[in-house]
Image (cartoon, rainbow, N blue to C red; front, side):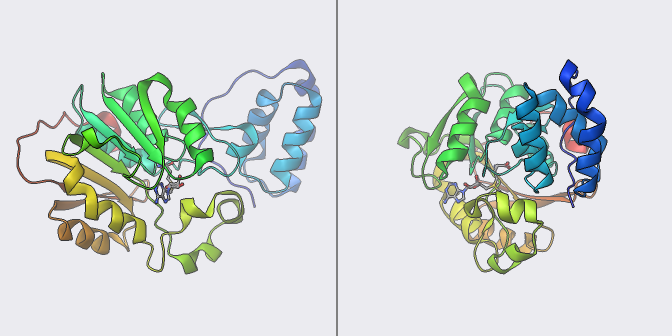
Length: 287
Ligand SMILES: C[S@@+](CC[C@H](N)C(=O)[O-])C[C@H]1O[C@@H](n2cnc3c(N)ncnc32)[C@H](O)[C@@H]1O
């Protein structure tokens, strides 16, 4: 069954799609798409030719994520390009953005680790003046997307966690965000087919208890954060206590914040020392 809720932007239909619209709706509905009308709107708006429209409908009916079919996802009011195989930014991650925003001042040094499409970094750059933004991911397809989404607002590196970052960032990062993979290996089989079959395994698989990558992020964080700098990691309610352990083990002062509406949990760690000014919480924090 198809289900998509990350789109809120619409554009007008072309003349050929006006003719095709009811047909597209019915084909998507028959394929099990719950929001067939909304999806048809997006697909007919995105298609530039009848052939492209046909191709998109076929791919969506076959179960590709809508975001991969149309090539973008709505995230934090932005249109984020998402290529095949790249992790589709989730609405719950807007809570991570909100928490990071509350801790980011203009000209802050911000790093989006495990950046995927670069959605988190792009959202932060769009909301805080003049941040010095760096992002990194191990997956070349994700890095390509992130470069497009972040554009001139930051620099995107390819490589394993901190390894590709310039050494000059050590001890200078004010806000380090990481939505690293956190699905336990055995739970991947239980994910919806859209994620399991169409997002890269490296974007999902967090190892036996889901926390392998988070632990590596936390273990090295204190060496990269400025005194008083913050590490923010998205996790699940069930895994939060183990994420906290990983943070505490690397000497960070730690707290957990949650948003029931988005089913989102974020662990925030702060490197002791230094007095840092927190921004007044952005409206998004209370979403
Ligand atoms: C859950 S996705 C999140 C992507 C993006 N931050 C977002 O919220 O939409 C996790 C990302 O971590 C990346 N990743 C996994 N292991 C990594 C590693 N060792 N070093 C860098 N990136 C890694 C994956 O390629 C994937 O893009």
